[in-house]
Length: 486
Image 1 (cartoon, rainbow, N blue to C red):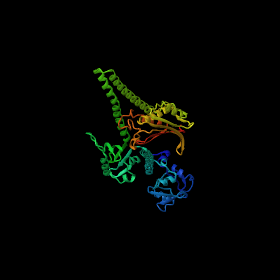
Image 2: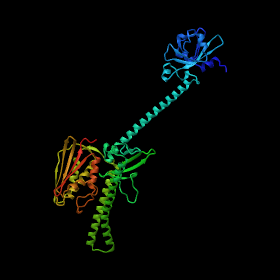
Image 3: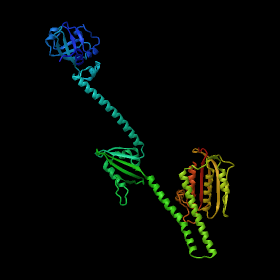
């Protein structure tokens, strides 16, 4: 097949045509790019040394080796070596070298400024460069993927580190791969203790904490753990296809405690409501079944009225506590003002029995605080009511207030003291529990919700409350109202 000059140049971009005087006639496109100063008419030997066959430095010698392998070394660029064959032309006695660069490394071609587009598709170096380009693209893709994986791993590590839930993973051979900070905290183990554990001792530890269930299957694959400290965790195990294992832990101690408190609250509330209801039902049933003298009937109706009033008070306080918890102070009307009006309003309205006396130690004025004055009055009313109820033998009720300034801040401290039955340290610790009452005889009226309501109101106003008490001596309630509340 005869090639036209354009087709020939495209197939052999590294050809060299020279005449019988060894003068350059034409260079292929790739050589023109590599040797831009080479021009027709220049001596071939100025640009190339004929390395093989040795001693071929004349036209006749070169014409005699047509068809043999010829290697040319460029004198102007040491890195350019060409290997090919000589083809003789019957016209004008021209010789044409058809070859390709000799290169062992991609860097050698890059140093010459040669790329994939400089070679024809049939050239082995073209395939070499094409493979190198594919490998380079694959390598770049791999680098990008590795970067994305590193970033994803970093993000996952951040999520695991910030997660309140615990994650512990083991390899297929049972050695620990990782455990986040939350896992150490939840399992109450430090990093070193967990790092020393393999899979089996770790599972044995979890098994020892597994909470027994009633008739329901439970295991560390999906179960509940109760630690020696009382902490309650849920655990789930996931086995991966490669044999690795991940354990997931979640602290449900608070949920468990809330469930317990809810159940306890419902039980206690039902009991407290049932007690007056039984009395009311009993007396009404008697009056319906029998006829009693007016005096006896009046006494029975008085008991019904008293128990109804007690039940209504309990329901009102339950509703008040529920409202405080659900609205989170949304119905409070805050204003910056002195707490003195609330103190005076509560103490002036106080109805003291005959064997009681009230002592007020109040300054001329108190600084302004940010409060709901009506809710604050309710707090003082409740505490003063308790002071009277829990002082069956009467005594002194003292109310004092002062401005207090310390390192922790500035505020108004209101103290209300009585000389009543007092409380033990154990009772004092429970004073804010719902339905807790310090009177074991249950002879003192009340619902046991008053101090819970008091603390809820003060918490919503950013205030604090403290109770100091001693059995058979009395109780002092300290209320601290910060001046710098926002």
